[in-house]
Length: 411
Ligand SMILES: [Zn+2]
Image (cartoon, rainbow, N blue to C red; front, top):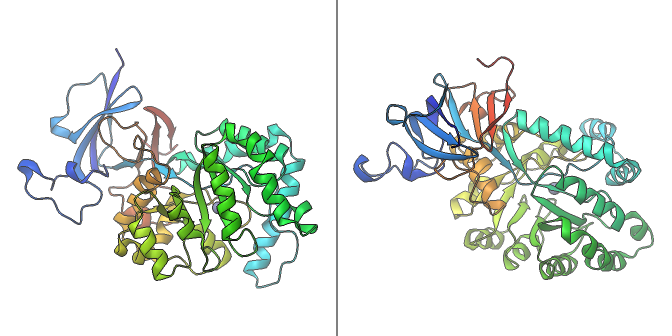
């Protein structure tokens, strides 16, 4: 028999299942349409093995082997960070400082990271990923996706994916991040697309679940992006797209047309783009406010997407150039302050939305049968994530039913 544990005395529980909330259906009366989060007050959660076995009010909890008292604090699903770039070496502090000082910065940008990543050992790259995954975990992230894209040769892209796969199941092949320096210098973008969709794809496909392309002026145009994604689809990889980050373009509509799991960034959208995302059954709009924060760019309009009916996810885009944060609470606070999201919407986007963007039904909720990925906050409510920006609020994190982190100050 698997030992069971009840986490009881939860002041406020986010389930992400509105049918479970105290104002939910059945004998409890009509449910409140504003209750996106399926909140239960004075709640308990029973964990058995790696799964959630029961959710409800504390006083109704069944007997268990072990008991944890949440002492009135809030519990929510672990964050699902569905977009990051963690396999890299080196540092771009100077570039950031120059950008924030209003000085032009002409040094290598992404090429700096590509050169440092190629020069790094496997052990060095793997240690970097492990450090960022641990950093994210301490801030409540229990699932994260990560990408290749700083190798840009067959050997280095395969290596990045192999290393990523040591740390997560959600691995994305991003050979089409930018045209590799060797091809860019020879003005041969077409030759690089041939490589990315040919030999490099053949070598990378076994290590990845997803294929991504940076569809943007200066990276890959709509036709090139289509070529990359359809080649990936033919190899069983599911598309995701870096779309409409720096300007208007075809990325979002291409993502929806090809049934991509997500269109990421979405900072520059026409009404047609918004309609496409709102009408898409399977394509999530993933917003990455760390990127706009770190480049002083205009934030995406989450309100417009939500009002149109699109599914929205929040993610970090953690990378050394344009968004060097692993903090989902930071992104959530910025989304509330700057992007028109309510605290409830932001929490839902950072958990359930991320799970949808990864096409996962086993994570992102606290419901019977879901994987027991849980974040206990040192706060009475999930609203504190946006209300107390920059404050470390993690009390404890469980991943697949195991206590994966406990804050030193937590009781
Ligand atoms: Zn990205």
